[in-house]
Image (cartoon, rainbow over all chains, first blue to last red; front, side, top):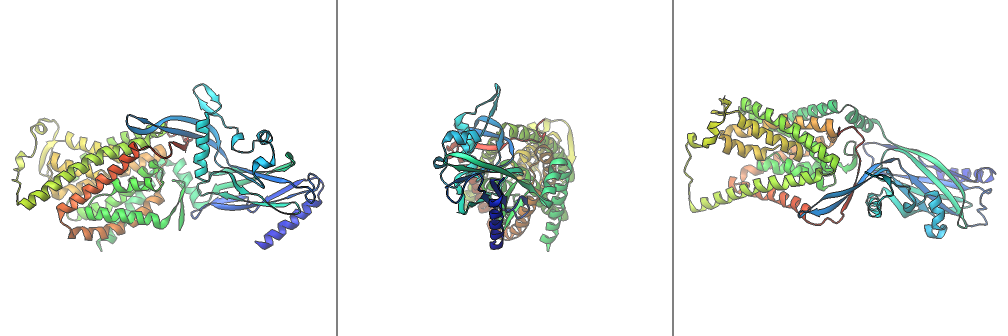
Length: 252
Length: 313
């Protein structure tokens, strides 16, 4: 860990001397494999701010890191009391909601820049370009359903804001931890880093992160989804075999 | 020890899963029931999506019924002919149940249907069982012995009017095939929408409606359950991809061990008291599910992914 830290520090210092790139970042792991023992993952994002964009030694700066997971259709349903029982009564479909969205910042977002600035870069829950699908076509989602989506995903640790902080180490070097919960969706993730100074954006960059089921887990999932009939028959055969075995063992 | 379940898409503790299997196995061994009606609600309770819980439990019940049916096979306690008719009915019921399940899943109402089915069926079966056993216990105290009903009088008159009569030698019955077909069908529907074997409906129906001798009832019911839950597993795999083999096998490991211990405890208990306890357990699950329907939930909203696989159409 320490060696890794030092090597990144050197990388960061090297980056400082490069005049063109104002910002370099790297992830401790760019490929997350979901295997049988997967219980979530924790990544470290390291970055260094070069001298061309910001003078890190003399000027204070802020870093905001946004991690966005693959977009997928999500449906939010609301229960209402109908005839004495609570049942799903109203629903709203979000055709492209990110399956994971985390914002980490070196300070509270409100202290870093004006809300309009964050809005123009799509940073933060309020600025996610979410649209809803209805019979009338695509439209701006109902605020109630939208906040419900955030709340539900937050409770699953899939949406995170104002929870993780970016720590400014020294000499323009910064780091943050990226938490991926066990129920993280698979696909391409985008890790975007924004450097702000005095309320305006000075530099940004993005790196990709790939999360996928691997090995046996991937094979089982693909099998179930691509050959569902064969999968079902296999499940039955496994059950018959296991039951027969249990019957023999139980007799003894 | 966490284990990632690729179909359920969640991480669960292996020992928790095996432990749940063991507890349900213990109770099912003690009471001589399949245990699906306990396992499915418990799976839902610990966070497994209801659709996955129902489909996976079908798969586990297949395995559990094989070992049970084998034991009955050895002592010739299975009426194959009756079982086959029940299976044909069950296949039809399971097919339609799975279709309804898939349709309601696309509407977001499958959880409601599962809860409603549990409340209605467990409520009525549990209530009847409790009434029967309490009456039996009270009668036993008063020293009352119910008069034996002659075998010829067991069937109601309407049963003999039904067409398509068939002879079931093992059950010593000559009745319309429509009856077991219909019973099998109801059980098939329940298997598909509740994640149960359906023994709790089939066994009383075989005794009270068909008038089958008790020595072939449980074996024949298990025989039917093997085939119907196997079919249900295939239907759910094809329609909704919600069968998690790994979860099913883990549950089974616990259930096999638990059932052995449970059966030994069960032998030591008085039959009627055991039945009253089982009735209370059934009613408890029913009440638990019922509260979920009538009490205002803490979170009114829920989010789920929209199925991208062409499952619905």
